[in-house]
Image (cartoon, rainbow, N blue to C red; front, top):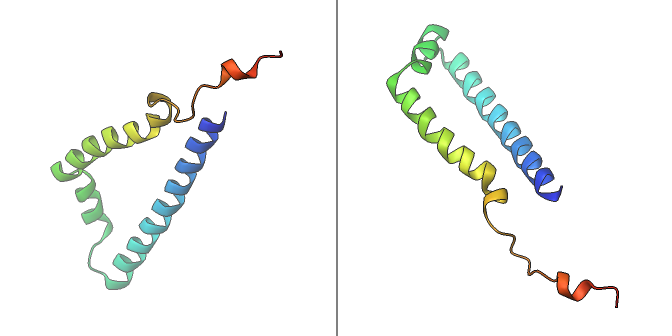
Length: 84
């Protein structure tokens, strides 16, 4: 259960940071009038964006699943926990 909570908290913090970053960038773009909505749409469909998404998906999935894929660093002490 602790690992699941760790994953949830990690994802929640990532979402918060990303939302703030996206909002900051959108505000900067709106205020500078450098890029309009059609240009942003085109960038989203670009080869560079698709390449990045494919790479990021792999990196993100590995980071997300790491708590279940790597052994726990704590020693196995079950033998010392008998009722005797």
